[in-house]
Image (cartoon, rainbow, N blue to C red):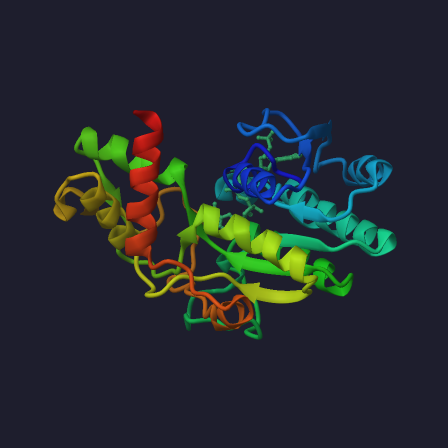
Length: 283
Ligand SMILES: NC(=O)c1ccc[n+]([C@@H]2O[C@H](COP(=O)([O-])OP(=O)(O)OC[C@H]3O[C@@H](n4cnc5c(N)ncnc54)[C@H](OP(=O)(O)O)[C@@H]3O)[C@@H](O)[C@H]2O)c1
């Protein structure tokens, strides 16, 4: 798996361990917080060398979580973002096809322009920013090579810690202008491994119900941490980093719900569960 040190990648390692699966992690700069069985080093910016290293270890499957996820960096360095997010994905997809192994790739709701909302898998991507463009292009490579694409957006410890810190300093704000359908990061990790187990290819949306705004989500976390919801204020209109984001990138996750025979936790359930579990592990 790639991106083992990231938020999602470390959850995938934990989930794989619980299922008795051995993970071989591709490590770049940071060490994974959860120990994989083994690791190799590689750089998305050297896609050909990266694919050669992965080929040499002959994996049984590839979970591709690594990416340039910083929207500002993608916007300012579009060529490098393209190499890291699209070209590396193309190489790994070709490799998976050559080795006849499944590959699952994590994409984003930011492939859509957000004019409609409640997007189904068939909706045409129309990204507003460079990050979204690189992920949309990566999706096409994955699908052309017979892999699986999971579009989603998620919350985990990084976001919840950030909200808690800003609540403590009285500076908590979040956008009321956007609408989306985030799921808990550990639920997304499970989906990726479920799709590998089922051997599914194609595009899937992993989404919660009901859709909400980042402000709503932060207020749920505030409640779970014992603050009043009003302790989180709406952030000023517009983008703080100058990168355009879709107004309504909510996804319709019905296809995946039906395939897996379950629904993702609502943001209310998921946020309060994660807040409790983060808190209890720290005590
Ligand atoms: N966060 C979200 O809400 C969200 C929403 C939609 C989709 N996604 C997608 O979900 C996936 C995981 O996101 P995340 O938030 O878990 O990511 P993250 O925490 O930002 O971690 C990114 C991972 O990619 C690795 N990486 C970055 N540059 C690399 C390079 N040049 N070579 C090799 N590895 C490199 C990082 O390793 P180093 O730290 O060692 O560089 C890290 O392990 C990504 O594909 C992202 O596009 C995320």
